[in-house]
Structure formats: C-alpha cells, structure tokens
Image (cartoon, rainbow, N blue to C red):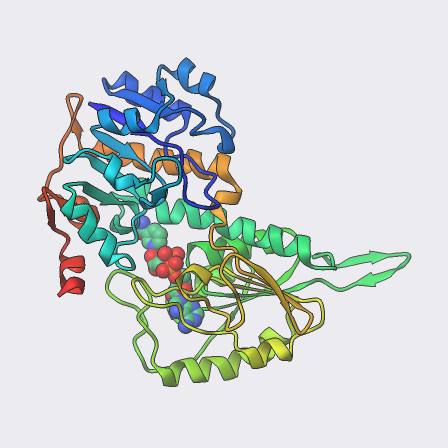
Length: 381
Ligand code: NAD
C-alpha cells in the first residue's frame, strides 16, 4: 500500500501530515511512503530527512497522486495553482484521504469527494473517547494554538506579564481574559499564568470551573438553568437570552483586560459573538484581542479573518491557523495522531476500514461513492 504525502498548498499552511520519523514507522510496517519534494520544508524537514527515513521523494505532484492508495494531508483539498485542477481531481477513485475536512462546515466538498470516489477519514470527526485520545488531532493542534495565542498577544502588547518590583517602581501584572475553556483555552490559561499574568476564564460549561481553578485561573460563571453541555461533552448552542446575560457579565472583565483571547466554538455551528463592538470601544488603549474562532465566524464582532486590525487603539488579531505558525511541533503531533489511527486499523500490514468500529463510524465521511457518515447525511437532508 502506498502512502502519499503532498505539499500543503492551502494559503498560510506550513504543516505537513507526516514527519520523517513517522514515515520510518510506516515503512517498518510494510507501507511504501512517497513524499512530494519539499513537502516538509516549511515545517523544518528536508527531502534528505525523508530519504534517510526510507521514503521516496517525488518531484511531480501528479505522479504522487497517481500512485497513492492513501493520501495524508492537513488541509482540505483545494485548487492546485500549478496543475489547474483541484487536488481531488488529481487523486484516483478509491483513494483513502485522511485530513481535516470539517465536513459539518463543507457539505459541498463532501459531496464532491463522494462523487469522485474518494474515501475520506476526517480528523476533526474522530470521537473524543478514551480509546481515540491518541488520534485526537483537534486536541493536539488546539494545545499548540492555545500556547501560540498567548505568545502572539504578548508580542503585540506594550506591557510585560509579571508583577515586577524594581528600584524603578512596581509594575502590576497583565490581566488576561480567556473566553472558552476547551483544550485551547486551558493551554492559553496555563501559558499566560507561567508568564505571570492574572487570568480570568469564562465558559458556558460549568464542568470546566474546577479545571480553570486548578490551573490558577479565576472562573467567570454565568448562572443559568439551561443545560449547556451535550452528551459528548461539547457545548450546546446557547440561547440569545443566555448570550445577552453573558455579555452583560463579561463587559467589566473584558474592558479591564490587557489581553482577551477567545476560543469559544460550538461544533458545526457559527461561533458565538462574545466580544461586541461596544466592549472594544470601552477597552484600554493598547490592549489586544486574539480571536481563535475567526475562521468559524469569529467571537469578536470586529475581528477579520487573516488580518490584524486596530480599532479604537485595540489590536484585534484574526489569525485563523495558529498551529501552522508552530509547524514543527504541530506537524510532529498531527503525524502521530494519524499514525495511531492507521495503526489501530492495520492488521498484518494491511489497513482495513472496519465499518462497525465507532471511530470509523465517527470519522469516515465518504466511502465507495457514498456519503456514509450519519451526522453529515442528516445535515445534507
Ligand atoms: P471547542 O473547541 O469545541 O470549544 C471551545 C470551548 O468554547 C468549549 O469549552 C466550549 O464549552 C466553549 N464555548 C462554547 N460557547 C461558548 C460561549 N458562549 N461562551 C464561552 N465559552 C463557550 O472545545 P474543545 O477544546 O474541542 O473541547 C470540547 C469538549 O471535548 C470538552 O468537554 C473537552 O473536555 C472534551 N475533550 C475530550 C477529550 C477526550 O476525552 N479524549 C479530548 C479533548 C477534549
């Protein structure tokens, strides 16, 4: 079976879906690994590194796709600037594609994959179960993103984070507010604390209060009778009434903050608006907002996807792909998530889709020309 690793062509993407160490592991199991020339370069891995691992470096992407049985990618297929075709059109029918497809947001693309006979395993649809934890690429990448969000804000803020008592006077610690205490938010909390900031965190799932407190954060709690968590542990879409109450409560916290990092997402839905224009108008001069949900509509009314804008002297960072800015470690972790997925379904050197398995039922989106995932089928109806 030939595993192919193309160079990512999605704008701004620096990661690669398989690092050389992981390529060596596939080869040891009996797979053949082919890598497009310079596929790993932006993540710090050269063609020589892949060759040393035993992989074959392929110059032409058309040759790579033509011989692939399985394609490992980071981003969803897009039009190839050099080939005048979509990446999907370069794959042969029956190819297994493992990538972040975000099918709940890209239903047209799902139908195109089915139409072309591409069998997609989407990394964002792996169930968050204990057995699948080592394949959980949403978590590995969110961890990196949460760390990077703090480092980026620290770089833009004209202040330092820690309390400092010096002969030249006392500097009070920076105040950081984090909206959303999922994987990214908790990592941002830990990182900001390590730099010495005072951190406040808000989430609609009361279950995260203890986690926030154990990491040294102060929890901003919106009291409600609504049940905000689904059976999978994810946030439910909050009602308008709840969001209004939340905005009133966080107004004071946001407007007194030096940094606001927003990470709030509801799977398959547009991100909730939490930081309004009115709040930004009342924020401190020189403060910084980083909107990690910008790709899914944004948590801040004024953030712009892919841009840093300055409004009322507040810098608003709308970077949609923070893990790509830490490409070496992000690629390393993502590669291992995919390796664990493939290993789990490889018996005696042969990868097989076990359609009865709950991980496959969650992550397999298309198979043999059909949309097979129940959540996506429901969405398409
Ligand atoms: P996410 O990226 O889907 O969302 C980020 C956070 O935003 C969540 O904590 C969510 O509650 C919060 N949010 C949504 N609407 C909000 C609002 N209006 N205001 C404030 N916050 C809001 O979350 P995630 O990091 O992917 O984690 C989702 C769940 O999955 C969590 O319960 C997490 O503990 C769980 N999880 C489980 C495993 C596992 O068991 N393998 C691994 C990772 C995550």
